[in-house]
Image (cartoon, rainbow, N blue to C red; front, top):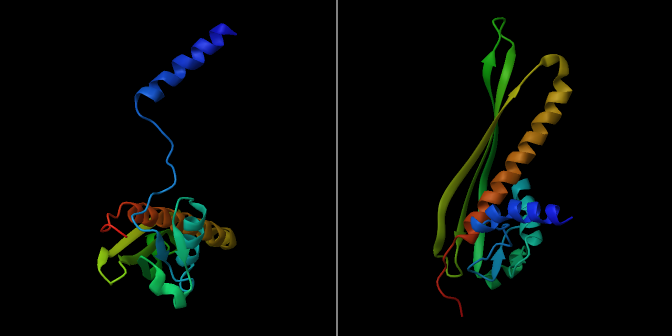
Length: 168
C-alpha cells in the first residue's frame, strides 16, 4: 500500500511542477453579452456554450433588451462549402474538402469595436464513394458539427481575451 502511494505521488509531481491546471470558466471583461437568438446554427451553438460555461456572464438573446448589454456579438457570414479535391481517372469524385467559415465582431455599448471584423475557417478532408453516399452524408454532417464546435470554442476564447475599458 505504501509503495502504491509513493508511485502515485511521484507520477503526479511532474504535473504539479509544470503549472498544469484544468481550463476553468472563461473570465470575460464584460458582465452581459447580447447574442442574437435567430440566425445561423452557429448562433444556437454559441448560446448553448456560453450558457453552459459558468462564470459571471449574463447572456441576452432578446433583441428588445439589446441596449442593456455591455457588449454585442455580431455573427454573420456563416458559409459551408463542399469542394472536390480528388477524382479518379474515370472522372468520379474520390475526395472532398468541407469548409466552414464564419465572420464575427464584438462591439461595446456605444458601438466601439472591441474585436474587429474577424473571419475564422475550419476545413476537413473526407473520402467519397458513390456506393455509400448516405453514410458519407452522415459523416459530412458529423464533420460539420465538429468544425462548428471548434469555431464556437475559438470565438469564446477570443471573447475571454478581450480587454474592455473599465466598467462601472
